[in-house]
Amino acid sequence: MKLGLQGARFLVTAASSGLGCAIATELVREGCQIVISSRQKDRLDSAVSRILTQTGASSSAIHAITADVTNRDDIEHLVRGAKEVLGGLDGLVTNAGGPPTGRFEEITDEEWLSAFNLNLLSVVRLIRAALPVMQKQGAGKILNISSISVKQPIPNLILSNSIRTGTMAMLKTLAMEVAKDNIQVLNLAPGRIHTDRLQSLNNERAKREGRLLADIQAEEQQNIPIGRYGTPEEFAKLATFLLSPVNSFMTGQTILADGGVIRSL
Ligand SMILES: NC(=O)c1ccc[n+]([C@@H]2O[C@H](COP(=O)([O-])OP(=O)(O)OC[C@H]3O[C@@H](n4cnc5c(N)ncnc54)[C@H](OP(=O)(O)O)[C@@H]3O)[C@@H](O)[C@H]2O)c1
Image (tube, rainbow, N blue to C red; front, top):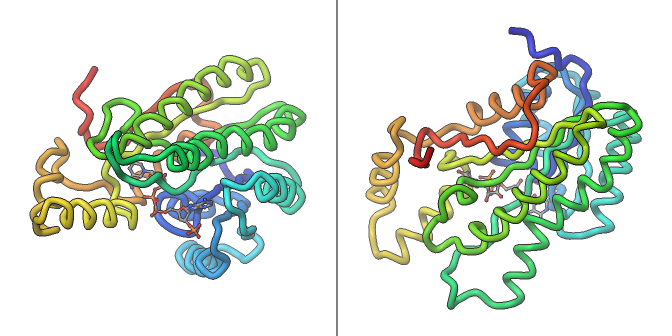
C-alpha cells in the first residue's frame, strides 16, 4: 500500500525526542516537508541532523522552529512560521511533554493549571492557529498525541488521567464540527512506548517503591499482552498511516497503541 504522502506538509510539535521525533522521522521518510518544534534549540537542531542522517533526505525537507507550547505567542509564531516556510499545512501533530506524577492530595492548584496549559490549552491554541489554513485549503489532518490514561486511569498520574480526558472530549467535539471542511481529527494514545519519558517514570517509581528498575521493567512488560514495550518507530508508523490520505474515513476516534495493555472493550 502506498501512503501517498509525497510532498505533504506537516507541523509536529514537541519533536526533539521521543514520539514526536519518531513521527517526524517517518514523515520525512515518506517524502513529506515538515517543521518540527520544541523548547530547546540545541536538542531541536540535533533532532534535525539525526532525522536527515537516518532518512537521507535533503535539508530542505525539514525546518526547526523553537517554541514552548505552553506559551500563546510562541504558538502563534510557530504556526505562522510553519505556514510560510511550507507554503501551507496539510497536517498538524499536537504533542507536548507529559505532566508531573502525583496523587490527588499532593497536587497543587498551580500544578493543575500548568497541566491544563500543557496538555489541553496548547492543543486548542495550536489547532485554532492552524485550522483557518486547512479550511482555506479544503482539507487537513489533526493528530493529537495523548495517553492510554484516557481509557484507564494510571496510578499516581492524576493530572494526565484528568486533563487528557478533557482534551479527548474537545477533539471529539471539534471532529464533528470540522468534518464538513474535510478535516479529520484523531487522538492517538500511546501506552508504554520506550522513550525518555517512560524511562524517567520508571526511575521515579523504582525510587518511590524502593525497588530495582529492572524488576519494575520486567513486571510492566509481563502485564503487556504483546510482552514488551513498544518502540517509537512502530508508534510512528501507525501515526503516519493515520496522517496519510489512505486514512480517509476515520475521524473523532481515539486509537490505542498499547500492545493490548488496556483490557476494556
Ligand atoms: N512514551 C509513552 O509510553 C507514553 C505513554 C503515555 C503518554 N505519553 C505522552 O506522549 C507525549 C510524548 O511522550 P514521549 O515519551 O515522546 O516524551 P519525551 O521522550 O519526554 O519527549 C518529550 C518531548 O516534548 C518536548 N517538550 C516538552 N515540553 C514541551 C513544551 N512545553 N513545549 C514544547 N515542547 C515540549 C521535549 O523537547 P524540549 O525539552 O526540547 O522542549 C521533547 O522533545 C508526552 O505527553 C507523554 O506524556 C507517552
